[in-house]
Length: 118
Image (cartoon, rainbow, N blue to C red; front, side, top):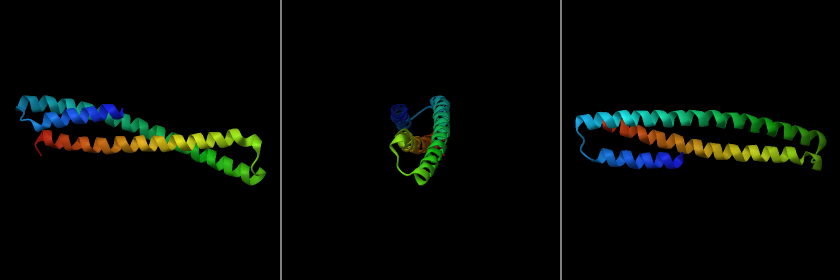
């Protein structure tokens, strides 16, 4: 997805640098709206997935902390520790990816204004 957004940013930047007829501007604006809508949908899905994993990671951390406070560090609970670690790492990667999506979609809004002549 990151590569697709970068490629589209290059494409739209090249197209908006040139002089466009009104018909070409209108077609490009339609294409741009469609692409931004697709990227916004992707952003929404990633937000929901990020929140979902964050809730599970917080829950796993709570359970892990509770188990440690009750039983102390025990070798039998290594799978729980690993699960918590994996969830926390996944949340970190999801946040990083969502941050990328959010920032680049915000940049694409600029081209929407340019194509409208604002």
